[in-house]
Length: 342
Image (spheres, rainbow, N blue to C red):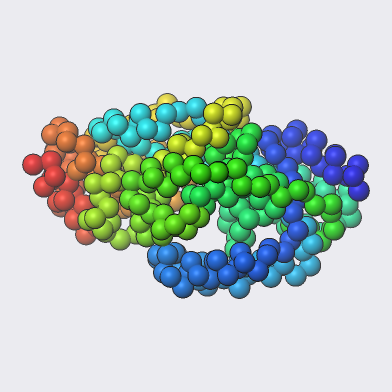
């Protein structure tokens, strides 16, 4: 078995993964209890799927009873960009670093499938592959596998990769030697909690998604509450602040994966151009990008919030046009932006 694990790590590296670890396919009861408290407190907002899949999400073996081990893989996507500098350029759109090129689901799933096919044959085992699209809590598994630890912002942190990496999981019915769980290296630091523009963290390792800019700009489909609009600034898709501020990023190297390299047209796209995208041009521009999945309505809504925060009078023309948009959500956001720009 040690030889198999050694070859697994070597093949994972050859596929482009930057870390590989093994965890049990059963999570501690406290993980399920924390998830239940999160949902019962309404902190998941409109993400009803979290409540609907709670029973399976609580532990991998609840979703697949035959599962014995979880092979956890990490992929670096660090671009070396200054998230805070981009947030200061008010007339451009600030897109979260992970979404500046190809959809990571597509890239990582292909790698995972190839690795899983080899492992299934080598270990004579059954396997299932997951990339953030099933009721599976990857972060606790990754911590148990030794990939990193969950920081005070609830995201995973690695001493080698910092904050900038994706996770993928292969569940298997093979019983594998387990990795050594990573310990907490946050210490007294609370930079990630203090930097949050909307104060979404209610305590260490506790977040209210309803206040989170990533939730508001990606998952939430309605009119963004007025109390958060100024804090959103020019962030039109996600927010990197709590990741970017982490001191452990000083050890992280830039990703060598060309498919994650930031597209030049997305690093600092002018709001005036994005506000003029119709459904067809929006889909064309963001083809293959995770941004496409939120749809034009939410995207333009977000751009209008950014326009209202920009102070750029030159944006009043395209904003005025959108104030008559057939979508009431877009029209309302445009009218708000016009008032701010006035």
